Length: 516
Image (tube, rainbow, N blue to C red):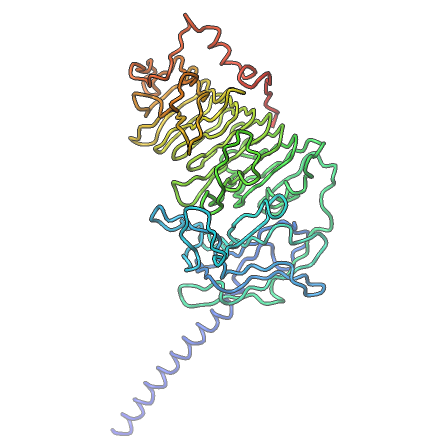
């Protein structure tokens, strides 16, 4: 009996050891095959890759991104380093005026090296990621995110213009960059992810170039297409942007007759978590905005440019809100914005120069339209979470913001103002002009208009035929701000008819929306 008991005990131990061995083998197999389940973009061995591409790793689990380790891109012909992304360097200063961390689209960690600043961070010990976008050093230096996590996909963004045509590259990723909740690590070595770029760029005479996030167009990023067009170009160019999400800052200075045309307003999305803390700029008192860095906090900036069209797409400033964060900034002459959703925070749209906005939506947390320009809004929708729809800063040299057949509303129970023109650090706006013709409104305070400068004699807060959005009846204007004026057809027929004409507001320019 004793021998039988011993044998049974040995059998039980052997069986436990066998099960343990099987578990170890399964775990080992999983660890060994984990990397094989990763989907690379572009695929390893791919050819004809756009040099402006961003890279994607699609994992079979949500990755954790760490503030250590490096991602390197090498020229395969001679093993020289083409680009390096050091994850120990913070993306940029972080706005913590709101308590929430960045949403899941942004870094899902808060490294100790991100500093809390509201004004410009002058501490040279604070080191941040820098990328030169769309211009020259040091003017167009931006803080940026070298890696973004969205679900189980990691997006990797090299520095601008580091890769060239007709080259073979390989990518190396340190083990410290990513890991997973089950403790697995991840790395890519020299021979695992290699690709070849296209042999040549598109023809310099191309009148239309295609951007596609899947890499099947002439460029993979919108900025890549912008960089292809020379500054002060003489030939009109259309940039057709295919459906997709483009996580990038776009900086387009000194261009003429460029059309940014999305394939679909709701499905062509340009977005980034940029704001006035992440990329800081000083306030500019100059109505011509000649300061070079006024564009720095915008997701898309088209400045010192003319005859630009932006159409059929959505531009979003994402991340922490509220913040000073333009989705779109336009500074120049003869700008057309057509069928565009502009979703920012504070200062969602900054418009300076002559700008025509048609059938578009402007959404933000206050001061949603900011600028010094003459801007004609036709059949647009203004939506505010809380603050004023406009902060008007035009001088007496040009008209301000004119809204015709537009909708003005707030979200939820918030009450807002149409516009305001207060003193700003001693700068006054005594000629601020905001005119509403045949508009529908809801969610406005009874006064309708916000603060004005103490020099209010020349303020033009004017309305004609404002109706209630819900009922369609004439709005109650009896408690409007004393600086405002209600126009009537009996007394102001000529003035009303003039304001219905874009050419009157835009100093003789009668915009024609191009076919797209």
